[in-house]
Amino acid sequence: MEKDHELIKLYQNGNQTAYDRLVRRYLSNTVGFFYTITRDKMVAEDLAQDVFFKLFKTLKNFKFQSAFSTYLYRTNLNTVNSWFTRNKWKRFLHLDQILNQQKIDTSVEKGWIKKELWNAISNLPKKQRSVVVMRIAEELPYKEISNITGMSEGTAKVNFHHALRTLKDALNDE
Image (cartoon, rainbow, N blue to C red; front, side, top):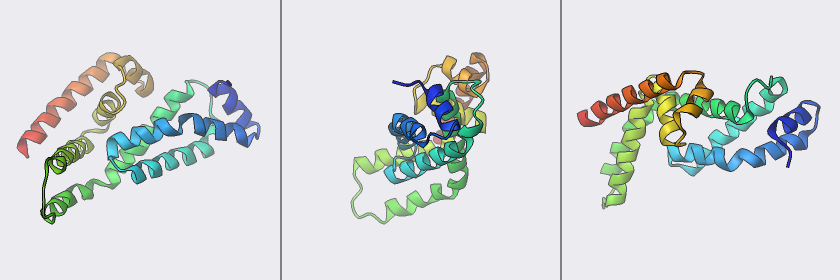
């Protein structure tokens, strides 16, 4: 099996199938990453498509200064941060949707709580949001988070703990 860097070099030299192999290798993980956050399969697939479209354009200039997986995580994080920013207004819609339902069961309540959590996460400062997404959605260790974001492990931990405090306050207010 070819390594990521080998496939990227082949792609940079005009081999389109090398890019296709990279996509097949990472597509399910990328969709899974977005699904964990959005809880919507179609949105997750759309975001993954956006990521791979961006990669299609930018991999021709890839400098091999980091692992491709790190580059992909950064692209995923930038994409999800943009999605959070674009969709902040939607956080208000869930109340109307719940009130219009005739029967409310515990699965709706659990979904509402998850939605509230992700809405609160979307309001965090960008660095804190990125660390929280990587810790919660991807279950990454601080060392890997520091490699991806370029911040120290200590800074990643501090951002995570500040984010947790902010989330706790935000969710208790509601």
